[in-house]
Picture (cartoon, rainbow, N blue to C red):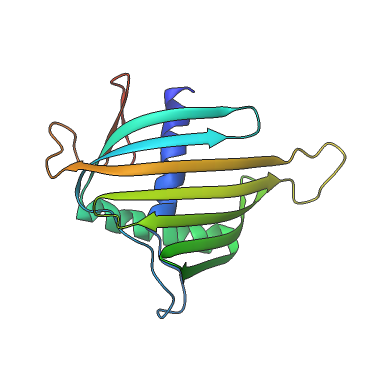
Length: 172
């Protein structure tokens, strides 16, 4: 996986972490990560075998708020439905969206305390809205395990992530 793909994969998962439902304020909100250094182990499988990525990311409260605002705007602009439910100690998000002309239907399940650890699993299907004979359907599973490493981010700045090979990217 190229560094650009790492960034996109990280943004996809992080964007689903901290985005409250738009509309009714009585709808459950999504968990926010504790500020500090997190280790993120992400696995993505699109049917050709899993691809793994491990990164460390520096999270601060402002970053989480920016993620929330960006996610709200993104979902308002691209989704016909975006439903958040609290169920059995987990938060579940079902969405029906269009990105780059492709329909993306997904279910995201989030669990953990988001203070010391969390698990996020996204099951999605991406397809052409008009479904022709040449349409390609991609079924994707992304699983992310987050583990709190500590209060200090060292030399990482808020919103900055570092891959296992030392490559750094801004995700915020």
